[in-house]
Structures are given as C-alpha cells and as structure tokens.
Image (tube, rainbow, N blue to C red; front, side):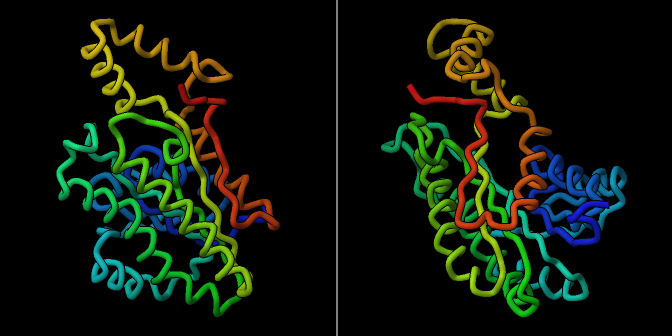
Length: 251
C-alpha cells in the first residue's frame, strides 16, 4: 500500500497515449481510476487492462461535463488529471483557419477550465485534492508552425498557477506537467513531414531532433505517466510547472 492507495482519480483523454499510460500508472498504485474520453471502444480496452470505471465525455462541452459530474456524484474524486488535448494544425499563423484555432483552445484550454469548474467544489468541501493539468514544453519554447498548440499550452500553465492560489486555501494543490516530445506515431508523422520539407530522410530528421536533448532521445509514454504519482507524493508542490523533456532545448 502507498500514500495514494484508496484514492479516486479521474483521468481525461484516457483511451490511448499518455492518458492511458497515466491511468495504468495510477492503477498500479492501488488508485481507483475513472477513465474518461470520447471513444467508448478505446476506454473499454483500458477497462479490460485495469478494471477501472469508464465514462464518455466531450470535455470541451459545458453540458457534457455537467452531465459527467452528475453521473460521478457517487465517486469521491480527489485527483483530477486533465490530459485530454489535440495537436491542432501545422501551418504558419497567417494560414491557420480561425475555426481550427478555436477547436484547439476549446479542447486544450476550455476543457481544463470546465473540468476544474465541475470537480473542484467537492474537493473544496472535503478540503483535500490534487489537480494535474497536462501542458507542454512547447508552450514555453519556439515551435514553428504550431502557434495554436503552443499558445493553448501556455494558457494551461497560466490557468494552473492562478488556480493554485484560489484552491490552496481549501487544501487543494494544482500543478501542471509539461512533457517534451514523446516517442510514438505523432512524432513519426512529424519527422516524415520534416523529411519531405528538407529533402532528407525521416531517420535523419529524427536524429537532428533528438540531438537537442541532453539524454539524446525522446521520452516514452510510461516515463511521462510515472511523473504523475511522483508529483502526487509531493504534498508541498503547488502552482508548479514540471518540465519533463529529456533535457530538450529549443534552437
């Protein structure tokens, strides 16, 4: 048993990727997980892995989030992990469609706002809780062609630090976790596009990219997920943004 055992955690975007890895990491700590996402089929696969409760929800929708909170009113949720997010368009700012910009902010920022708005009051009443919002090192460093995404992640960091000072008097900690590049299909797609743009190979594009990291590699989903229980074990941690990037620097 650990200090986390017996608590209940709600994880958004838990059907795949980092969200799934976080759900698995928390379940391994004997945390009761509520896995939330938009695709029932993916969530059912997570349920089969760890026996968690699953709920579908579009976290960018006020009505959907309110309905989710009502369905979960019997759960003593003391950990909220806002992981749901989208990458958005890859284009110069002058070519970004306003609708695409709005979609990124709806999912990446409004979703965090709505989930906190819905699930913080019970934590305040119990005077105990933890919120971890997934941001990104891309919100703090140049990433050409990704202004909607980077702006949204910086907004998440700003939301986190301010909310921490609102929640602190109620005994609730609010922090953000900013991963660097994570090995997987999304990065492979980016390397392919970079190779096409520069006339090199995807392998060369990847090598040039990871050379910017102190560890000379990207992160894994499991490494990002492991940071969540580690942060939860630090009771004095709040209003913090944890940079987990393998030492990636911008050039």
